[in-house]
Amino acid sequence: MASDSVFEPKIVGFLCNWCSYAGADLAGTSRTPYPQNVRIIRVPCSGRVDPLFVLKAFQDGADGVMILGCHPGDCHYQQGNYFAQRRYALMHRLLEFTGVETARLHVDWVSASEGQKFAQVVTDFTEQVRALGPVAIKRQREAAVLPAQEVVA
Amino acid sequence: MTAVEQEIRDAARRYLEQGEVNCVIGYERGPTGKARPAFIYKAEDADRLVWSSDCNLNLVSYLHNYKHAPRRGAPVPKVAVVVRPCDARAINLLLHEQQIQRENVKVIGVACDGSEVDGQVRSACQVCRDRIPVIYDVLVGSEQAVEAPEQQDDYADVVQMEDLAEGERLEYWLQEFDRCIRCYACRQVCPGCYCFECVAEQVDPHWTSIAMEVPEKYFFHLMRAFHLAGRCVACDACEAVCPMGIPLSKLNRKLAKEVEALFGYRTGDDPKKAPPLATFDPQERLRL
Image 1 (cartoon, rainbow over the protein chains, first blue to last red):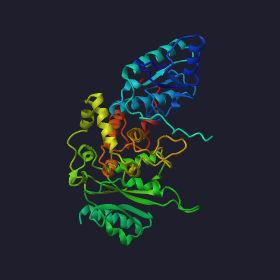
Image 2 (image 1 turned 90 degrees about the vertical axis):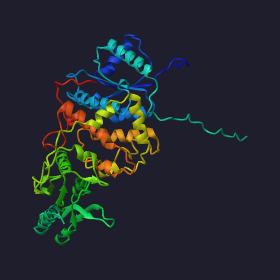
Image 3 (image 1 turned 120 degrees about the vertical axis):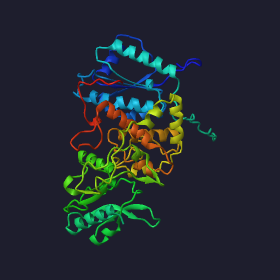
Image 4 (image 1 turned 120 degrees about the horizontal axis):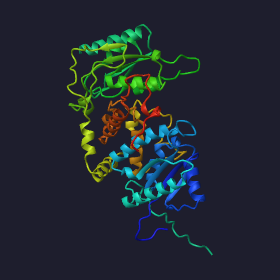
């Protein structure tokens, strides 16, 4: 996938089970192409996504994090996405304050019937993060190289 | 001994003599001459209590040690605590979060015009608007003796930080966090940090490693700042105890500024009012 010339960002997508995950499914079944950079994690609700998940994702090497939930008013649990909205409005501003580009965290509403919108959101976000380059706060992990074991004959 | 000290001692002695509380939490003079927390259980010890400008911890965090009955069937201990206006906000926070019961806590409020660190008025006190605690049973220090604040807090230090370029901000914070030795003193003194098991030390799920690396420190400090979003009372105890002098209050004040702007909420004004992240408004649409 990754070539030498083009930076391929790693993107973690937290998708709500009831709307956005079904939307992604629709994009798949209707053969709508979208970038393969997104690693999808299914969560029960966008309100389940703890800001720790976002920090942890960045720390462990994600270049962008995407949180997709039901449209306001459509939450399966009535109120989860409203909590998420407040949380990530603040989280955005805190990340910005500490020098992490806000464009690396994207919160959007994608319903189960919006396969096209899902593909569009993922495409746009991937390009946005690609333009930013790798995230600065990720752990500089050395490739785990185990010492070569001597083969005992 | 100042008049304020006398009033604190009188109040403490009265509470202990009448059996209204088991313990009074205040300050005493330590062996090095600095003020340190004191736990007074007997009325005759009340004269150990002092009050001076270097009393810059938040004693409300000790209330977490008195939340539960010491053994089954025993009553929950009753405690009196000496508070400044910022600490009093923490009492309202804990009341809202049902960590303490009002009837178990007596509040000795001190009218405050700012405390000092190394002879300098603390930055938090320079911008503080409060002079009289929002909640108290006994008010110490006359209102007239304490000057009213000249102007509203304009978050000048936060705005200055916001005006830097993105790369400069990142570099600034990575340098600051790099000094962190992960002693968790900021967490220990914070009245709002009372999780039974902290994320920083949790093993399952293993949120963050114990490595002394910048990404781990960044994770810890942002996690802590965010857990205090809309809950920080700006007592600045975290910054006062930080052995490495990391400007933690800047993170907390940034969030306080945003919370005030977005939700018109200030921590500790009213124990009935929920912090902004614990509630929502179906009509609002925020910039995401």
